[in-house]
Image 1: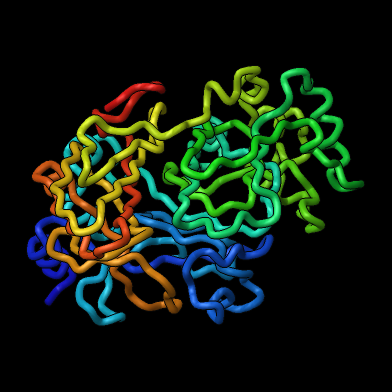
Image 2: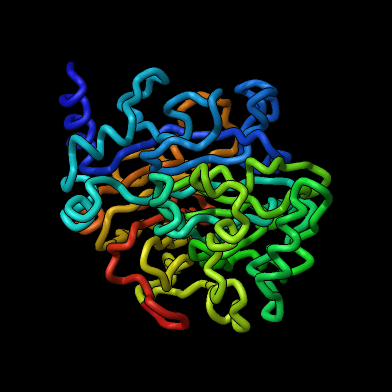
Length: 405
């Protein structure tokens, strides 16, 4: 059976719903939070030199920017085309072959691909203060900007790590000159740039939207992160939790002739957004419960109010069966419970070995989403909980909070 035939057969026999293979990603910096439900022996499965596994990516068509030692497909999702571990095909190939049949006419005509991915971001210690490039700045180095959002799932956070607070932007009274003075000392001393920022304690069951150009230092809870198809940043903090980050981390996404131009580095910031005096009011995202929720199930928007990405949390009560309708394609990950998702036996992972298949991650085509996906909770006691990530074409997404959908 050839590649194209395998793709079409897998899509058709499962009524437009795909089961994806777990996609774990190492990072060479910081410490693993060990909340990814990966076997304790496998957090360094790719070797000590690659760093610990700290992320799991969902519905990804792009590779991670992980340096010269990374495999070309690192960070890219695969679709399981049978129950055999070796039988898998890149999700990107499914998107290219199926096109609008999978992701819908609007996304296919506009982007030619699935334009976002999501991930679990799992660090025991807080991450460095960094900024994701705007689309304009990213285009100068041949890349895309990176808007992203955070949701803190209670099911995935049995402990808070060492610092469950996230820094966003700078204090409204901070000037560009103060920031520039710190950055000029990047290779000389601990610049402690978060002294110029402001931190918010993380509240489980809520989230934030972070536009490109806004500097932030994520706290140490595991984060569910829907984001645009990009993996670019600039690291403005040279020492975090005792770990040193070289100057290259600050300028790796700057043109070669701008790497020692601190005014250019500062231009990567969307300054007005960084010093917004009402930052929490503007970007904090409490959950918005959908009006179709009832005693059998509850659905909430947890990412909304932006032009790029959206996400929901679906909870099905014990012993219940529901049909869930959406107006756009989406990826999803189960974080609690077991039962059926369409024709699949579905279950949240408890402990995975690196490289094995699972029954917790899926991609639902636009057609299947509109027809309705039947979800059964087979537990007598536990709810079945699923996180669902969308691109920017779900018309039901709340544009502003607080509203109901």
